[in-house]
Length: 190
Image 1 (tube, rainbow, N blue to C red):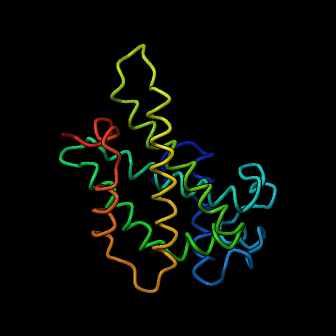
Image 2: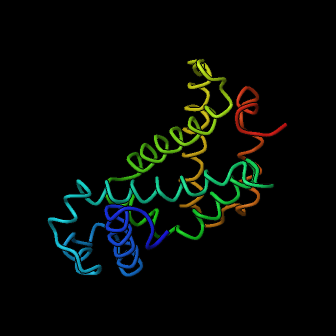
């Protein structure tokens, strides 16, 4: 995605890349905005033109990464289970980023809350693709998506902080098996 998109997108990507680089050296709580912008040749006002604070940056990064994974659904043989597996691989590969930024910026509850909100939005967007034009998604289905996301996000947090987590493949399988039956129509090709 580098080099593509609007100037705003490229600026956000550059800031995010600088932040990721710094996170490999120290926790987010020790990183100053001035260090982030120094790493990408930007200014502090530029940072604040695009992000309210470091937490807003980390949420934007997570939303961006999650959207890239979800956008693969329906492309060729890419299925719901592939999304789950890619999601868990993402968490494993980006463990330091996720824990170092989201958890250390505002704590466990903020991490789970931001992740749940993002995942709910992404799943609802995907599910809405199967809703006939002119009709809306039922409140019941919306609530099931929220419940599913709350449970899976809490599990991801525990998985990330565990000394011996199950493999990404096993975690993806657990997520697939725990998907409520009424959501399968919207997310799984049966």
